[in-house]
Length: 230
Image (tube, rainbow, N blue to C red; front, side, top):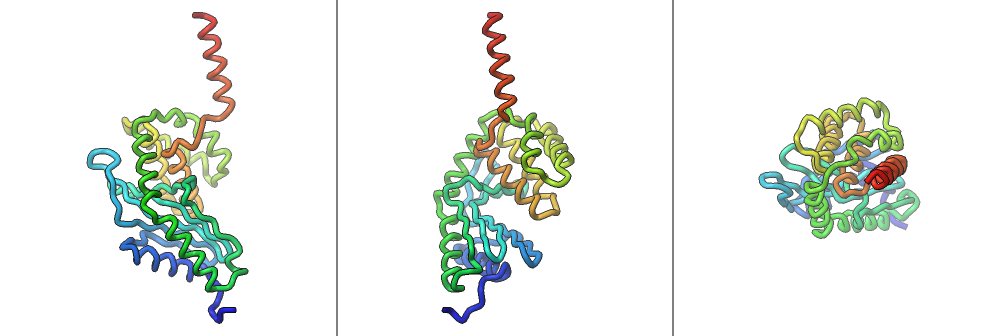
């Protein structure tokens, strides 16, 4: 058994910073409250999603002393918004870290961080964002159902801010909706709420959220009436 102490959120943050800086990356922000850790980083890779609108890849980490979640992260440079790509294949979830030998837990954490740093993770995210720029955001008017499932504190206020942001701009694509969500997330003080909004932004960008079943039923019924009249 190793003589090292078990991982804490502080040591997880240190390991994360070491792995990111070893790849010429930068840790953007870190929030710790003694039991939870939220931290995000960017890596050197930069790609354009639109002319003069660049994305930078990175890694986001959320954890406790026993569990860690790691996801590819996409940072929009022009407005400093970030989206967490929780659906990505490279996503990692480590459990029972506090029950493991500290050296084994350290090694598992470093391996998981490395998995999220691979070039393919960012390349996939860029493809999803480019597709989002070309796809209409039909979900915008149905976000209330999504928010009811998320059960965020002050969810109605957050939803109003997101829709205000979205409809204040001419971009009606999934990319525009993603930016509205992540801009509200950026200005949110609660780290848990910010994380969940950034996950929502990543899911919208990737087209991983569909209209609720009730809406689908109404659309099908409307289409049947249209066909009958025709």
